[in-house]
Image (cartoon, rainbow over all chains, first blue to last red; front, side):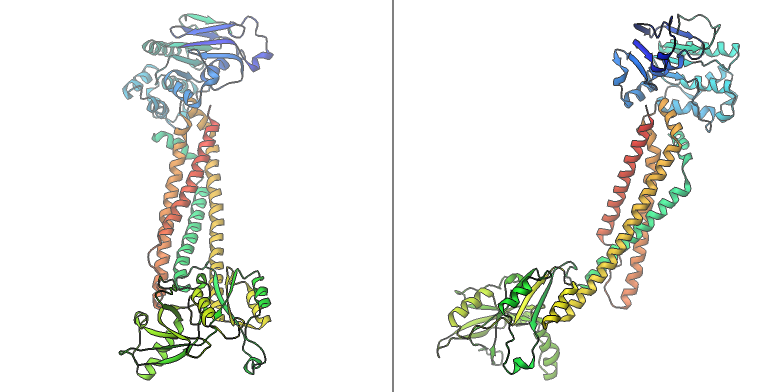
Length: 214
Length: 398
């Protein structure tokens, strides 16, 4: 899958100074599936907007966005739900976990929809991220960092061409961040998928293919 | 998807849904019981006649001493007939035509005692007659005159005359088999013809000896020599027999009719009124309960709107998200159908039990229309609600 922007800019960004941005100032921006993109910038530069527009949950933009040469504005609700099951996965900045469900139930909710991973693999990923002992606890009572790891595991429970990760390490220490990053890269590799990762500051993560200035 | 149900059913309002459930159930029982009893009682009261059938009313002038003394005529004058025709309650009016020549009947049969009697005929158009018989046709070639006599005449004989005289009672079928002759007499002496007569039916509506209209017109032409008289009776059809203006009009003009008939139709109407009132009340209850249903489900959806948006973000289609709501709706609907049919059949059983002691025939099982109505309504309510659920979940999705 390729993602192509043509003079695309979210409407709220029109009121801001976007000079020097490789995203909002570009005539055409092409994102390739085999690459890993990191978007580092302070808040308010439109990182979340960018991911949300690709994912179809925001449509307040000017210009055009194409997924595999198909204009996003022509996608139906059915197209979007298929896309979110098979082509695009999103680690939301707001996590979007259900507080009343346990961590494992939150993960299963997605995995039941896609049937992608076996239970053993889910447990394995939880062990890798050090949250296996919290799987049976309600998500609402976990710390934000623990919830972030649950959300990461959930996002990996589906096939995808692009993984959109929105500040997904913000509440983890460096060590945990590195482990989670490693898991994400592995899973992307297995699928041959691209990654677009946003971050507030210098992540200190092993270098990505491309740093996009936004 | 147990988890989906777990997430979305959490936000239901038990009180609202229970209220809507009980309300709809009450409305259904009221409606279904109303229809059930209407069907039963209709059968009993209306003598197999539909309550909505138009009423046939035969009217005549009251006989007074003037007529006895020959001072005034008993017939309806043409302008009086026109006046009745102009009344709003009279949908159709037809005068009775009488014979204008002497008629007599006699038997020449070894099996029956001979008898001879003078007779009269009257005729009205066929559509006013309640006896439908293929034999009710006048055919000069065959020469048989079909006759309809009032059911009352036969009853008078069978239940009054015959028992008191030690004579056998005669069933309808036998009477129809009796052959007798009818002699129609012209003005000139010796100018008469004999025809075969045959009783083809018994009327509950008309208290007269009836022959086909075309026959009587033909016979009046051929034999008639009496001075033409005004018709003594009129038959009128009223689609609204309970209209109180009928009785008022008849009283003002000094006309007479068999009141009993109007009375029974009035009773029918009162019953119809009570039952339609019941049905209207039931409809209002069902309507309100339906609204509560709709609103409770909508409230449930809007309470869950954040969760629905979240599920949509995770890749759930709005149809998948609607499923828990639709299942809940269908479960409640199935419960209402089953319980309302159960309660209605219990009520019907009770009524059957009571009615038996009054030796009335009330069915103990539910009429087919009850099932039809229940299913139809449930289907209607379900479809409307499913539509609303799909629309409002779709609205929340992107």
